[in-house]
Amino acid sequence: MAVRLFEGSDHAEAYLKFRVAPQELIGIIMSFMEKRTRNFHLAVDVGCGSGQGTTLLAPFFTEVVGTDVSPAQLQLAPTDGGPSNVSYRQCPAEELPFECEEVDLVTAMTAAHWFDHRRFLHEAYRVLRPGGCLALLSYTMDMELEYGDVSKTLNDICKEFYAALFPYRNPHIGSNSVEIYAGMFHSCPYPDKEWNECLRVRRHVPLSGFIAMVETFSSYRSLKETDPAEAAQLSSRLRNKLLAVMKTSSPDAEVIMIVKYFYWLARKP
Ligand SMILES: C[S@@+](CC[C@H](N)C(=O)[O-])C[C@H]1O[C@@H](n2cnc3c(N)ncnc32)[C@H](O)[C@@H]1O
Ligand SMILES: *[C@@H]1O[C@H](CO)[C@@H](O)[C@H](O)[C@H]1NC(C)=O
Image (cartoon, rainbow, N blue to C red; front, side):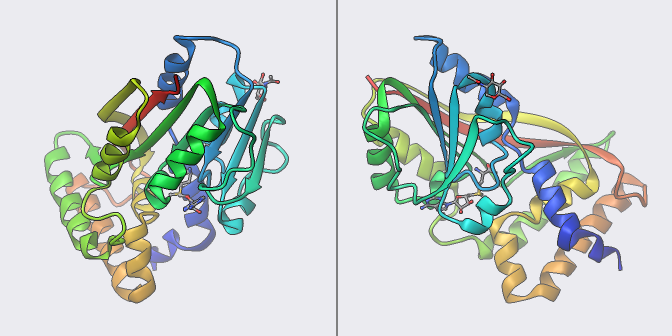
């Protein structure tokens, strides 16, 4: 029965709540930009999904536009209630509806690995003004947990879970998405650029939030499509094993979830 807890609207809610680009990374992007100037007009967040990362950019820009190819994702973005200077457009990452040299910042948060890399980089360079920045960030799947003195055991259980999902990874991403971003970084011709392979971001979340987060992985969703029963079982096995080690029955028990972000930043000369 408890498995149902993680379906439907609860799931969508948890997704919105826990799958957020962290403020820490926005801070890092803005200090990279502010090394040069402090007056920013337009930011474009490409592959913005439901706009969770997009809205974090609002305080720093006159205007922020989130773009995504998926109408379903964009529908989840806040229309009213969100910052008034943030809007959304439906378009592919490889064809951005902006003039040449119009944009101060192009970001892609956990999205660029889905794009046509060569065409997207080309398009980002076209729309960026000289001195404008490109920021690509994502995180690896191997999230860790901290809880009392049983963290090691919890992480062994998580590793088993990740291994079970491994065959369901999209072949486009290969075994490691870091490599895709590293390849894009090396092909970026701007001299002023920065690569960070691991930024550990810690969050206090209920265990159910962690489970909901891993259920948003595309490999999990792909397993769920092929074999819903197996997916549900895998997830409830993960939850029950973690709960047993934590010696609690409450999925609300708070754990520390560690997300390993990687990112690169580059400034158009
Ligand atoms: C994992 S989601 C990330 C969403 C959001 N940036 C976030 O951090 O929560 C990836 C998004 O990229 C979008 N996407 C994939 N390929 C795309 C493309 N070629 N052009 C534009 N968006 C694309 C998908 O529709 C999806 O919303
Ligand atoms: C954009 O909206 C954010 C959040 O509402 C606000 O902090 C920021 O000052 C706005 N920017 C401008 C230039 O109005």
